[in-house]
View 1 (cartoon, one colour):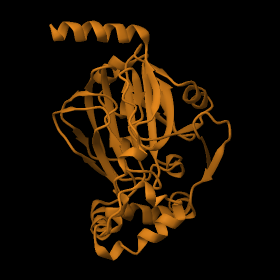
View 2 (cartoon, one colour):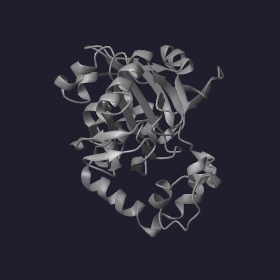
View 3 (tube, one colour):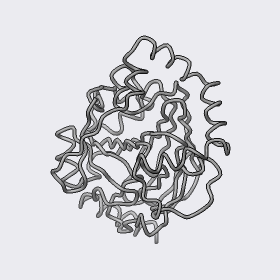
Length: 303
């Protein structure tokens, strides 16, 4: 299967295809039998044990070469396992954080699609459709009708740590168990990954963008979501967490009349084309009326 992405402010399409292994697992009878074994928790735990052991170190160089990873962007160290490399930390100045209060930043390196939230919204992710109410509880979703859903799809070549998009406070993490599936597009033809994949969500009470819901979704045989905090006061650009050894997805739900997305992201999303974004990079800004309300609230709080 082919899917399309574009660099920021570019009209040049980048077309990629799902790999042969995924085609075999999801599109053949024998592959789906194997898949039933792969997605079990014992198998997932076995993979985790291997990926965290020194036996997996030999995979690192092959992974770097295959995905054309610029290792000079990351902190130099002697990696002890494949997962140790996969969760590598970037050199901070390689992912500068746009610190302006009115600027909405990307939480991660990823491919981004945006949707307007309606009560019957289905998220179209490479020709598969998922109801918005499969993400979190219906009573919470109702607060976000008219707002924006941002879907950040991380692939294996991406930097797999993610940050807070603004300063503020957060509640606890709500963990929802599921069956581990890949979030690469090939799987979405057969399975509803929002319903079956392990995920966590939390409410972010941000200073400049109101109450935002962030959902992290795991992936095939891995799905390891590592959030750093429960109830917590955070700063914009501070690391929120990371995914272990695999492609994953982050969804942000933003309320109505809060966010103006950058033009390239809006136009690409209308064509169902993903926009390639980076950790800490601007993807939009607050609406003028929101900025005024925030300033008034801040003045009241400082009295």
